[in-house]
Length: 140
Image (cartoon, rainbow, N blue to C red; front, side):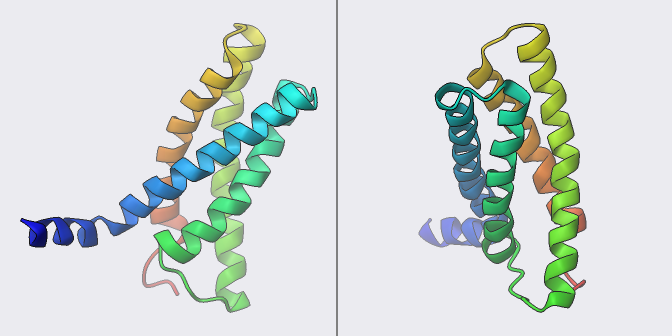
């Protein structure tokens, strides 16, 4: 039984780590958003963008090193990965901004709850984009 569990953990290591770091990234994103919005009084959309920048920096490092095992730090590898990662994250930021604008600014929904829901959608999209485009095996 334990042998099967270990095999499953090894088989799904990337997804498990992505889940762990995804949760941490989401916590950082929501905390930064709430801090900007509630403590500093920054409006909704600028708060979303600030939180996004903080979360993306954390996510790049953890995804690169731990989730997708991209240990190559040569500029020829690092810079293209960073550019592709940021481009993919900008695309999903667009999705998040649309959700937040419609949900908060137009429909006056609960900010932090909508932020959490938007993050679930964004996390799934980010994993797919990172796996298929950013940290592809064999490209390093």
